[in-house]
Amino acid sequence: MRTRFRITLTLALLTTLALPTWAMTEAQAANNLMYLTGARNEALFCQQFGGKAMEALITWETKNKETFEKSTKTIEDFAVKSKKVSKEEAKVVPIGLMARLQQRDDSELAPKRTRVTCSKYAESLTLYEAKLAR
Image 1 (spheres, rainbow, N blue to C red):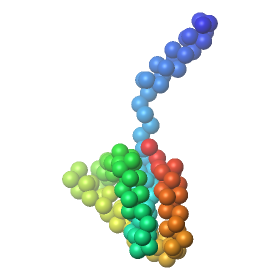
Image 2 (cartoon, rainbow, N blue to C red):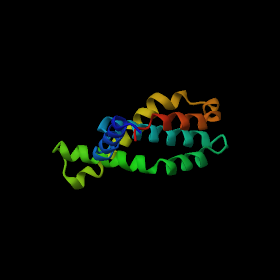
Image 3 (tube, one colour):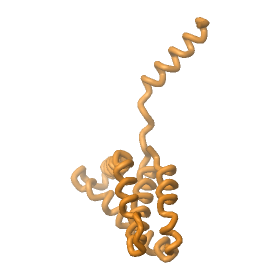
Image 4 (tube, rainbow, N blue to C red):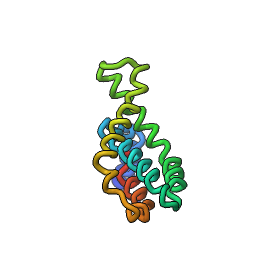
C-alpha cells in the first residue's frame, strides 16, 4: 500500500471511531412516533377484514423496538432540556405526543382507510420503516 493511502485510511478510521453517532433530533423522534401511531391505527382498522395486519405490526414493532425506545427517550430529554417539565413529568410527554398524533390520525387519515389500504399493509410498514430516523 502506498504510504499516503495508509495515512488517509488510518485517519478515516480514527475519525469514524472518535466521532459520536449523530443524535436523533426531537423532530425525527416525533416523526418516528407518528409512524408508529399510524402503523398501529392502520393495523387496528385492518383487523376487521381479517388478514395478518396485527401479526405484521407486532413483528415490525419488535424489529424497530430500539428505534422507538430511542425516540421516546429523545422526546423526554428534549422536554427536560426545555425546563418546562421535571424529569419525572417528562416521562409522560411522549404519551401526550402520541395522544395528539392519535387525534390527528383519527381526523385526517382514518377517513381515507379502506379495505384496499389493508391489502397493502405490509407495503405501508416497509415505507414507514424506510422513513424511520435511527
